[in-house]
Length: 352
Image (tube, rainbow, N blue to C red; front, top):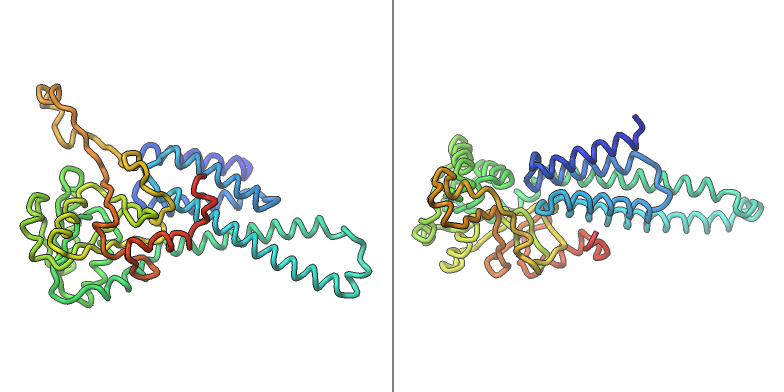
């Protein structure tokens, strides 16, 4: 099978995984997307940067259509598109300098005009492809390495604090708490996030307890009652939007609202792959709805006939509910996120 045919099979397989939710979660989707684009770029020679940009955009549209609620996929596509544009500008600059030096030399004066055009185009295509693949590898390493995020966050945790987190599914926060426990002594309160996160909360608490961290699981209804004893609320959302708001797993809105009422700080942990160019103009489109059978058992047939049950899998939290968004670049106020987002993406790629 040719390289082109092989990459098409891989794209189809990844698209199917997204549609069937066989792969989910911001970090897992971001890593899988970056690896796929790396193989896609290396599968053929690209005559120009515009050709590569158009094909990556086409692939991005296909992946976003397969699973529009996994925004990390689109984020990675846009990061790579920004990289391609930057690499192309750099290659053009280097070529201009080399061309000027060649023309000023005796060899340039005696050479036949146009004799090196084809070889120059081939070298430019090769340099572009190699540089883009190298940038993608750096991005993959960045996604997998959250040590800078942990280092910044550790400075914001003090000894004997009580921390509430409604994120039992977050690998980012689990790794963070385990890392901080090596230097700090603190208590973690984990909300159960009924109905979608009950089992995850138990496993999350078990992992923390085994590491020697004092941990308690709280019913969602008790959040207001304990908030006065809480030092801070820490969350890790699915996506950070350009306005400083976040799309987070369901169950996070209540603790954040309670924290605002009690004047408790809300810290948001988000890797750069979670930063998005999107604005929440249509919030309902961003909210994923799951199995309603987790709210009311389908065995209750009489009740099911009388009710319309919705089980949202995520919430939208506005920037007014958040205090600090911690990324690998440090802590930022929510209203400053649009600047951080623009450092990572090009506005030309807002719509793929």
